[in-house]
Length: 175
Image (cartoon, rainbow, N blue to C red):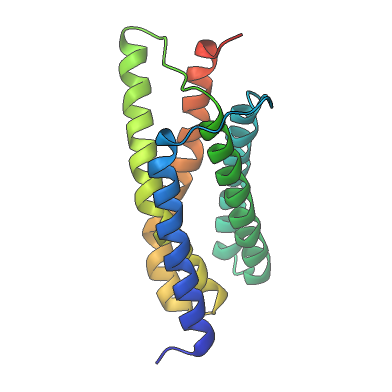
C-alpha cells in the first residue's frame, strides 16, 4: 500500500520523466535567439557529468561498506548535479547551433557508436534513475536495491560516455 508521500513522489517522478524526455526530444526544434554566448556550456555540463560519475562511484563504495548516510548524501548530490547538467544542456542546445562531428575514419565510427549509445541509454535510464532515487529516499531498501542493481551501471556509463563524446567533439567546435 502506497503512502501519500510515496504517491506524490511517484507522480513527481513520472511528471519529471515525461517533461524531461519531451524537452530533450523536442529541443532541436526549439531555437531561442539571444545575444548571450553559451558556447562555454558544453565544457561545464560535460564536467558535471564527469563529477557525477565520481560521486556515483563514491556512493557505490559507501553502500558496499554499509555507510548508508554517506551513500544517501552522495546520491542526493548526484541528483542535484544531474539537474544542473540537464539545465545547462537544454540552455545550450536551444540557444546554439548544432556542432557537427568533424572526425573521419574509425574515430568517426567510434564517436557515433558512443554518442548513440549515450543518448539512447540516457533517455531510457532517466525515469528509472528517478524512481530508484524515490525508492531509496523512502527507505524501500529491497525495491531500491533491485532497481539500483541494473540502473547504476547504465547511469555510470552515461556519465562517463557524455564527457568522452564532448572530448571527441571538442576539435569540431567553432573557434
